[in-house]
Image (cartoon, rainbow over the protein chains, first blue to last red):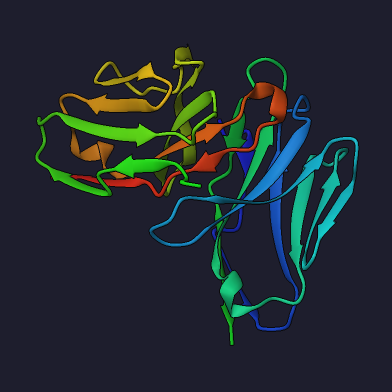
Amino acid sequence: DQQVKQNSPSLSVQEGRISILNCDYTNSMFDYFLWYKKYPAEGPTFLISISSIKDKNEDGRFTVFLNKSAKHLSLHIVPSQPGDSAVYFCAASEGGATNKLIFGTGTLLAVQP
Amino acid sequence: DAGVIQSPRHEVTEMGQEVTLRCKPISGHNSLFWYRQTMMRGLELLIYFNNNVPIDDSGMPEDRFSAKMPNASFSTLKIQPSEPRDSAVYFCASSPGSDRGPRRYFGPGTRLTVT
C-alpha cells in the first residue's frame, strides 16, 4: 500500500507559468517532507523540504506547502523554466530512530518553451 | 567532493545469472541505502545500513537479493539468480546519520536489464 502518492504521472506547463505538483500521504506520523528532482540518467537530488511544524517553506522559485489536516503537500515552481523539466519525487519521513524515507512514484514535469 | 559512486552504470545479463552492484558512499556518511526505481512503485527502499550494520531489510523482495557492507566505504547488492522482473534502476544513497535529518544523497544509479 502506497503511503506516499503522486497521482499525476505527468504535467506539462508553459515556460513562465506556475507549475504545481501534488502529493498525498496516508501516515499521520510523518513529520518531515522532502522533494527531490531527477534528470534522466542521474540520481535524484534534493530540492526543498518542510517540517510538519510549518505550513510553508520557500527557496527562490520553489515553495512547498503542507496541509496536515488534508495530508497533502504541494510544490510550486514560479516561474517555470525549461531546465525544470524533470521527474519530481515527493518523500516523507517518520523520523525517530529508523529515519525511514518513503518516496512517491514521481511526476514528470515538462516545461514547454 | 566526490558524491556517491555506483558501478556499473549499466548491466545487461541473462536470466539466471548472478548480478553484483557496487556502491561507494560519501566519505563520513554513516548511513547507506539501496533503492530500486520502477514505474509502478517509484523509489522503493530495499535495505539500509547504519555504521555498516544492516538495520532494515524488509524491502528486499526475495531471498535472491542480498546486500553487504564490509566497511564504511563499500557496499554491494547481489541478485542471484536474476530474473527479468528484476530489471530496474538501482540507486545507492548515503546520509550523514539519522540525527542529521532524513536527507539522502543519491548516486547516479545502475540500470539493470535482465533478458
